[in-house]
Amino acid sequence: MIQVRTAAQQGEFDPEPNPGLFHPDATSSYKQNQFGEANVRLTFHEKNTKKISGTNCVMVEPDIDYYKDPGAHALLEVIPNTLEHGLTDPQMVYVLRWIAGRQAGVPEFDPSYFLA
View: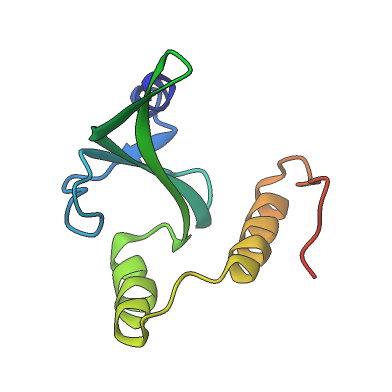
């Protein structure tokens, strides 16, 4: 969590002003702002903690939003997913992230697995 807040201070992530609106019980949320599409969002639930092997842990809800723009995100992703009881499609996120990375000139995403 400290690293994400530091990244936000450095301008790499934008804080969400009201994280509990779309993520019940969330206390803070930060969205990467590097790409036009497919940015990582990390939502923290700091009241939901657990000690695991002696380490204090906080619940984190990671996801990737299709759109950087909050209006486009709400109109084209959140509302349709809510009405259709759907979720963000991981294959679409993968494609959008790949395209955004290529356009930004970042090293190619090369995980040790593939989507079939």
